[in-house]
Structures are given as structure tokens and as C-alpha cells.
Image 1 (spheres, rainbow, N blue to C red):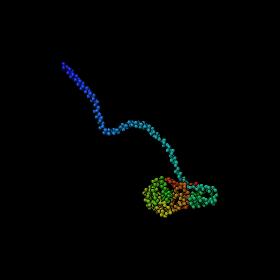
Image 2: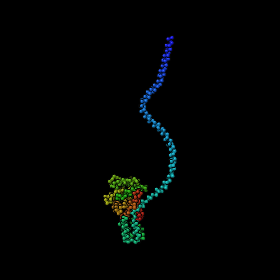
Image 3: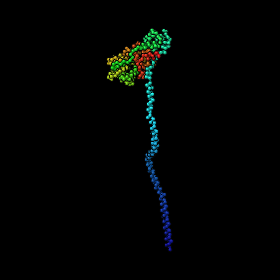
Image 4: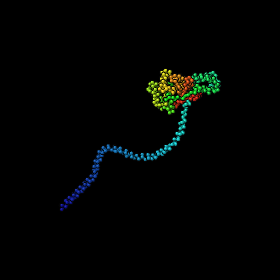
Length: 402
């Protein structure tokens, strides 16, 4: 009987123990899932280790730009494809440009029109205005004849030529004063050959004149004209005294296509001339043009040097075909003195009158012809390479009386 209650109590204790164990097990299982997160937290603490990876990530940060580029690239590709077809049409328009070639044809006559002869018509300072009033008075009084003499002298016609002209006019019946004076001026100039002589092989032209008269420029223009005629030209730079004279002549040689012979500054001019003759012969040149020193003609040593040059030329190739004196038309009666001095040294055969551009009086042409019998052969009308023309007596007299 006593065993029954004790057994029941034991069973009860066992059941309670089982329940307690079961509840404990349940509690333990519930706690384990909640405690499991701490384990992932330990890996979460591992990210601190990746910071180095974070440092390495900057290059990864640079990668995004690569990701950014692709999106931008597509929009860029689309427009150009549409733009190129748009550009194609303009290319067809220029292809039809041939009509543009038509305009140049109308312009061609304009290009040919430039009056190359325009500079050649520039006149000397005319005296026609003063003469017109004088001759309108009918018969001339003694005072009128004196006034005519003054007008001619002021035009640099010279005393000898003026005296001759006035006396001839007084001894003839004058119906038209201007026409009569024109005839007298042409009579003084005479009907002489004013062409440039070509003789010898090579032909030699000796060019003289004072500094500033336009001597080197005249040589360059002559060389250019000969080149256009198909002639080969050699220039001898025998002006070895003037600084940069050979440099200036060399520029003209390049412009005209001529060859040039020169020595150092201060060298013997006769030696340059000798080498110039030899070079012209070796190259079978058509024309040798000799530039000479141009110091004032009053210096005796200059005239002696010119005479020496001429002797060298005569010995090596014969006398020059032309010995041209370059005169500045604005120098007036001083030009007559120059002509006398140079003519004594080198036997001047002709005159090249420069700066005949409308400002010069020009009467020096008549004075030189009357006093020395030296014809004017060339006139310089400007600085251009083509501004050198043969002297036309009738054109000159008409300009003088205009």
C-alpha cells in the first residue's frame, strides 16, 4: 500500500523532469538561432580587413568612367551618321563650280587693259601755259621775245639752244607761234639714230653717271628688256667704291635673270671689268653691261678710273658698242656739266634721262643735244622694271609745250 503513493510520486517527478528537460531543450533551441547572428557579425567584422580592398577599389572607381563612356559613345555615333549625308550635298555644289571659271574670262581683258604705256605718257613740266598767252598777242614785241627767252631758260633748254631757237623764230614769218616753236625744238634734237647699238661678241654697254642719277636701276631695266628679247646678259659690278652697290645690282640681276660678276668692296674696278669680259666670253653671252663708279665728276681720279676701264675693254673685247651717260632730269644745267666731264673720259655715245615723270623740266635734253651733239636714247619714267622707253623726240616736244 505504501509502494503505490511512492511510485506515483516517482512517476510524477519523472514526468516533471522530462518536462523540465524538454522546456530547457526548447529554450536552448530558441536561443541558438538568435545567437547565430553574432557569428555573422564576426564576418561583418572581417570587412575592416577589406579596407585594403577598399584602397584597391579606387582603380575600380576609375572603371565607372569606362562604364560612363559607353553610354555617351552611342549618342555621338548617331549624329555623325546623320551629319555626313547632310555634308554630301554641298560637295556637289562646288563640283558645279565650272561656271565660276567664266568670270575670270571677262576679267582677262581687264588684266590686259592695264595701260603699260600709261607711265610712258607722263610728261615733263610743260611750258605751254606760259607760251599760249605770249603767242596770242600776235606779233611779238622786244619784251615778248625776252619773255620767250626766259621761259625757255627756266625750262633748262640752255643758253646756246635758246639763243638759236629765238633767232630762228625772229627770222621767219610766224602764223602759229606754238607750231613754229615746235618745229625749232625738233630741229635742235635732229633726226639721229637713237637705237641701242649691238656690235661685237659680246656686245658691251658701258654705263656711267653720278651717284643718285638712277644708273644701277637703268642697268637693271636694260637687262630685263634684253632678257625678254631672249638675249643672255652678264652684269659686271665695277662700282666697287659705293657701299652696297654690288648688292643693289645683284637684286636687279636676279629680277632680270642676268648673271653677275663682282669682287670684294674696294677692289680694282678694271679687274672686275676684265673678269666680266672673260665670263661673258666663256658663257657666250650676248651682252655685257658694265656698271661704273659714280662719285662726283669733279674728282679727277674717278675720270681716270673710267678711262682705265675703257682701255681694258678695248684691249680685251674692242671698244664698247655704247657708252651711256645716265642723267637725272631734275638736275637742270648741272647735267650739262656732267655730260661734258664724262664725255671726255669715255666718249659718251648716248644719254639715258631718268626721273622724267612729270616733275622734271626736261629742257636738259635739248641743251645736251645742242651743246655736245649727244643724243638722248632712253628715258626712265618710274621705278618699275618696265619703266624704261626709247626716247621719242616728238612725244617729248609735245609734252614740253603742253
